[in-house]
Image (cartoon, rainbow, N blue to C red; front, side, top):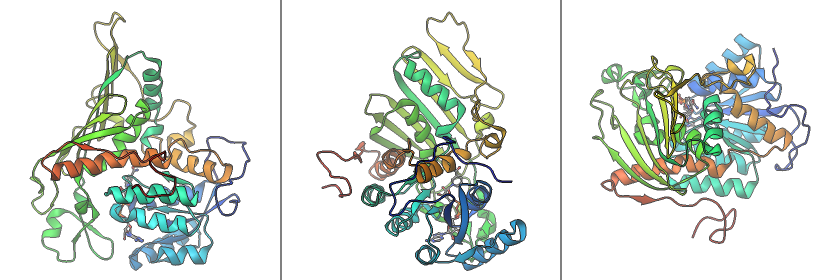
Length: 414
Ligand SMILES: NC(=O)c1ccc[n+]([C@@H]2O[C@H](COP(=O)([O-])OP(=O)(O)OC[C@H]3O[C@@H](n4cnc5c(N)ncnc54)[C@H](O)[C@@H]3O)[C@@H](O)[C@H]2O)c1
């Protein structure tokens, strides 16, 4: 069944950003055929009428062969498979690519694709170096291509509600904002050349099982899932950060060379304090629909809080509302205005929005609310928190990625 991916159905304006206008559907190539592309982008590209899946690519030949034959067998869709993204782009006349590769390699792949004329969707958490953030910003500015970071929680129902509440001033000035992402991902840390994953226990007896990119990544590096929605609520950006960590080898999995938990304490431009933490090697209490995430905002006049466990409820409390106890509010991840199609799109009904926003930008010239500056502003605080940890928890200032008197668009700083 063909479905639409758009938030502005009926608009027909063509994009003037690319080297050539993009005709509907967008000819899409998928790069990096791991779990997320296979489970999210590929099925959606086959379903939404704005997309045509033209080619797939992974550096592992076995993974490519498997994806190509699977698409044919299960969907009757024939696509070309590649192990080299540059070759795929030059041979396939693609309009866009979805880049979902190892996080420390995403930005170079995405930037080369933009230089070759493609619009790009890319997954969280952007990058693990400030240099890559700059490379991304300046390439988007120079090429004029559409770039969308596919962080999806910022589109959720409760985040839309919290944004309105904060903007209305009901809870006063936001003072203290918290976010947590506590998950146990035992299958994510070791992989062999064919793409098969191993648990830390299995990896101990298997020399073919090599550490994945999740070992390269600092634990705190996965902050964009918290910063993207919460900075959207606050309409703010982080200017200073301090990071703190337990030892850099897991207590739970001896052969995982990664801290079990890292915390970032951040100060924003509008004078709020954020405390955010990430743990990907220890199980966390389930937080209802959000599962492994948790969010909280304390203002001068009130509080907004996602449920602390699956037994609880989302809470709202406002001083002066004569409340002995906080209000229990049935906020959801899915938006109340979403269709059934959207509500079943994945991650509680929010996986639809990145693909819809991207299609609207590429086909209909709609501006992206979540632009490249906001995207790197979700990643740079995590990168600087990791740098702070390396420097004994020294406070570090964040660069300002927006162009201005200090930097022309398309130019690197300094
Ligand atoms: N938004 C979400 O909810 C969500 C959920 C899961 C993962 N993600 C993100 O999606 C991305 C992919 O995650 P994953 O779990 O699928 O990872 P994965 O490690 O399973 O897959 C990455 C794939 O990229 C391939 N690859 C690496 N470098 C390449 C290159 N230069 N060219 C072609 N292929 C290359 C690897 O061989 C691998 O198959 C990551 O950024 C991750 O953080 C986001």
